[in-house]
Amino acid sequence: MKKDIADREDVSLLVHTFYKKVRANKDIGFFFNETINDWDEHLAKLTDFWESNLFLVQKFKGRPGRAHIEVDYKYEHKIEAYHFGVWLNLWFETLEELFEGPLAERAKNHARNLGHNFFMKIFSARPK
Image 1 (cartoon, rainbow, N blue to C red):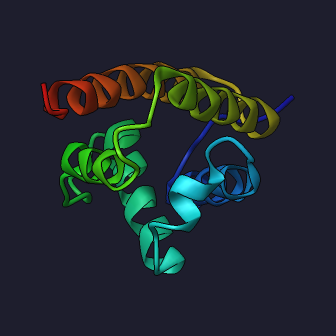
Image 2 (tube, rainbow, N blue to C red):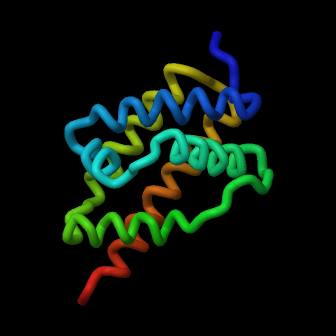
């Protein structure tokens, strides 16, 4: 039986394992690999983000919605719901490989909501 996500170390394992898959993915990896310059800093920030969301602590500082809009602009508004689906499937796959329990389920639900919200922000920010 797998354990549930319990602490920052678990969140870091999840984030690092997940983004290793993302970076290698042919459908979405390039968005990340061509945009992020400092992966150590980015992974630490994403660990803060997920730790904040899962454990309801205030560690994350940033504007992820704005960042996603900027990436969409960089790629000439070519980010589609499909790309968020690939991202979400990789997230679920990684969670299911590593963890099980209420916080793992919260991470799935939160990611599902994030994907939808980020795509809607991107779509709404596009030129009409």
